[in-house]
Length: 439
Image (cartoon, rainbow, N blue to C red; front, side, top):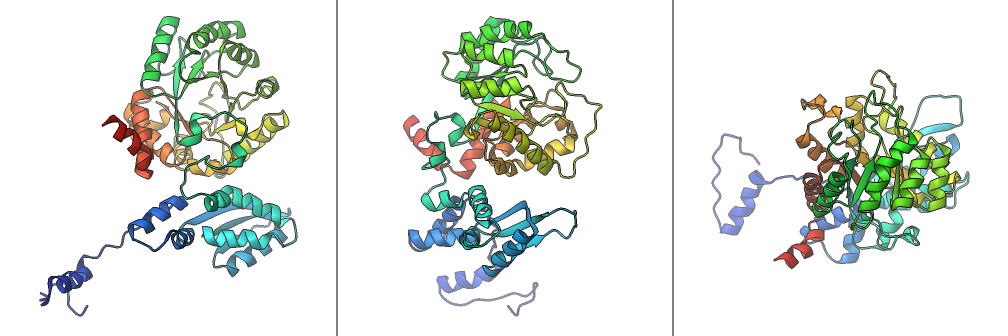
């Protein structure tokens, strides 16, 4: 420690002593990102930390979380008091909005949040309900109940519905446009035989969902009459319904959605966020999963400018309202999938903000779909609009790493590979059994 950087240091002793002394100059302080309890447990495993029970408790103290919400002023005072008392931090907005609700930002470890929510159970001002929302958002109860981080394991809220491909990792949705004018592949699969051949190729490449669309939402696209849209999508859906894959229909019209479900579709994908009330009632009546997208205009109006305070939080707020409308129509939360709507009423920079903060949409309690494939947003980083496979694949890897449940893409083989790489980098054990069987 007394040596200057240019000094020569001579260490005499056993190889063990020399190695220990050398560590002073070779030591690396390695930062660790623990997004899940399982991440923290793996770090402790590698450090050979004691027994499983102690490891679990230490892991909870190693995983930090920050949540932002709005509560009553009196609730904020208690939250701050309780979280500070267990070693966390609570920042309360200093702005006076004239209303009763204030913004709060809570920061702490899972262990501190666990103690906070336990303490709130006996506090007044309906704070037990706030505690329940925090526990659900941070997955605290599920984290205590299982030793690994496999989503869906032991989750009672999932009881009673079919297994979906997004229940266990990121699912890949392949786009099958049966239109003459879509922005990326318009006309390629307009013929039914070409469409079916493409669908089979997607299945062979590992796709989980095929999204069939008969109307373009690109800027300047004209509306397709209902009968014509049904004529385009229904025969294709009927022809591919027996493939080992889920089929969704990309439409904003309830009549088209009904015809698609009759033809064998499993999922409704509505880019208007269920703007048509009849679409909500259709999804509720048929019990079909439905994708609710945030959009300002569909088709896109590139001349329209939208001001957001914080694009992610503003979109979450608006999607919250759409989800509540869907639930009021009788659609259970487990059947709702949310889509931030990249490219629909957002600037290129805002689209990247949404992509990079995909994990924040978990606040809605629904699976998250990210649709970024070949969009003009990538021109921000020097890619050609409409033909940017490399950038799309990179975006897919980011979305999967940030917790997207579904990625909607044109090029299935490349994006399946990107998803697998992203998931394997987080937990290679999920692929080891398959690799051993192949060998």
